[in-house]
Image 1: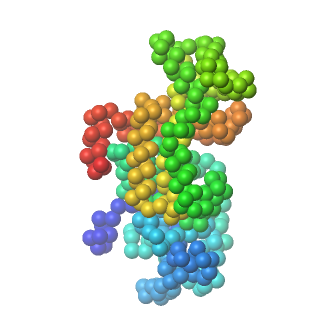
Image 2: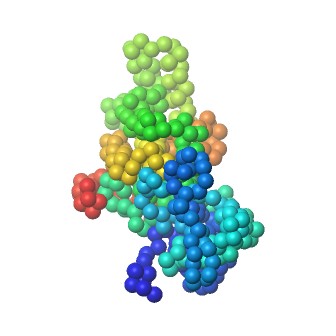
Image 3: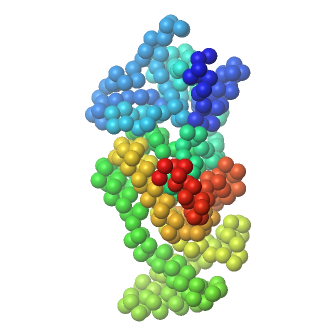
Length: 397
């Protein structure tokens, strides 16, 4: 083994699993690992955007060691820094097998690394691996990339988006984001956000990071409760909260319809908080302070999604991540407080008091981040003065 190979460190749990299976000669497990993750094929962005043909990037290559033409796929931890010219597709493993069978090529997995493998195409077998290993709950676990930031403002900004990363199956601290492949990232932004261009991405990113999101009715009623709680020096009852909210709205000349709307939101928040307490994620004497985390957590992910879709570059992604970290520090006092704000915001946005998967998924993720020993929420200080300065030094900010 060369010195470079001996010094190589697998970046994610995927490469670890491939290395361990390869070392045992356990090729069934090797393909289980591949089937349960994204594999990536390189292509030229110009050709992809134009919708024609295949580029020379990622073209088949001759492997003299096995005497076969091979097509390279890489796994998540082997992806390069995103560039303007090269993008990656992320097909299912059996789809790669069908492509190889059609072209008479072999599969080359992470060539030149200790987890490399070379295989003749077998799409039917590879589909069986996919069917066996892919379960609905498989991806909802904490994952990290060993080469990613773990301290400092950049890591803090990444950790602000950890809830969605866990829910979607991606490492929480991956800056060099390719997501589920260039075309999938673009498709997702279009379908869920209506974003089809850099201008659209930039507008949405600025919205999520803007203080103006605090003007929503959700945030308004929470700020009223926070203000009267601080003034009284103790928790306030729902009647006092409703009364104070109504008085403020009337003083500002708001209509009866607006007052009724605010009252309805207060009722929803109280019922969600009651469920949080029943589920053991909110103490009896505590309340959710703000839903800014719902916007800032998505802003953290939007910074990365924009990179995956090539609407920005790595430097801009990092800038936006740091910005999300700094705004989170201003709005919250702890990771627990931030995380509950995200859960409540997501429920108010999507769940409509059904207490369905929009609710249960985020409660499960919140518990993971508050209990897993590898969680960034347990390992990155929430901007205590000493922790912040040490983090800045380690991250180079």
